[in-house]
Amino acid sequence: MQYHSGVAETTRRWVLLAYRLPREPSTPRIALWRRLRRLGVAQLIDGLVALPLDRRTREQFEWLAEAIEEAGGYASVWDARPSTAAEERALVNRMVEAVVADYGTVTHAARAAKRSDARARRRTLARLRRTMHVVRARDFFPPPERTMAEAAVEELAQLVEVAE
Image 1 (tube, rainbow, N blue to C red):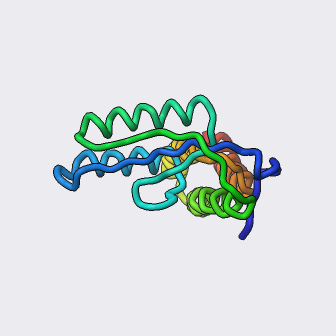
Image 2 (image 1 turned 90 degrees about the vertical axis):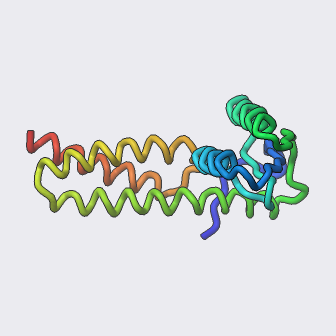
């Protein structure tokens, strides 16, 4: 499935984090991987990740670069533009595919919870709201699946309200 943000692709700027960490100890590598996943980065190649450039994403990469260097690694932060619109579309599509899967999981869980008892619905609703917050934070190019997940969570919330 192809997605795009509606913005002229060749005008978008990106922030890149180039890094290298020693294999041992593995704890900093694992912590970095988790933080990069939470940010929703696009992995360009091993040791090179990208996000759409804004003040927040650049700041996040600068903090990560400091943490990498403190762990004995090397890191640098770059501003860049893909050289072709096709490269940018591929980058955007990779980022969107990651959140589409998460939105699908939320939608499925919300619909399944409608068949549960009131207590289970309430717990599921709280968990899905937290999950939506996390996924939205790394959703730079909202796909239609986001709206579907939001609607499914809202339907569950209405069902929980009626039961109370």
